[in-house]
Length: 227
Image (cartoon, rainbow, N blue to C red):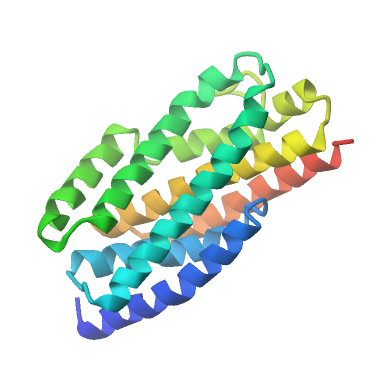
């Protein structure tokens, strides 16, 4: 990888992190958060793997860590409200998906935060763990559960929550935020994995940009049905 390419990735990282941080503040917009993520995750991995470890990169890593903490904090705030609702058998169906997405993202962050001498081992750990946790299948399962493909879930996620919350707007907004968080961490890990194995990042980006627009449409439809 040339010095010029590394510089380009660093520039993308700086611009992308600002956008991601802005999007975290308004994370209920699922579609808006996607493009900056695609720009950041792959660039971050390439820079880390090429042992570019100056002060700028340390700052960027810290900022990426703060994105992670902000996302996780939002998710925890919403967890309590969502657990109050009995949701038929739905939670059991996608509890494993959430667990896998969190684990993939945790391994991604371990690779990002690794010291240069441990970086190669953490990269191998991430690559192995990503495959063991069903790769991008978790994201596809979550997507199909949100947009309402009935083969995997007894009922679409948004529909079930709408019914059990009796159309409570706050509950549905919390749900949309939580789902967006899961898509965020899943997409970051996916783009990181694509960068590690040299997959078609652009093709993945195009596919999921379109998918997240569908997710956003479904969320808006659900919120419009709220009281």
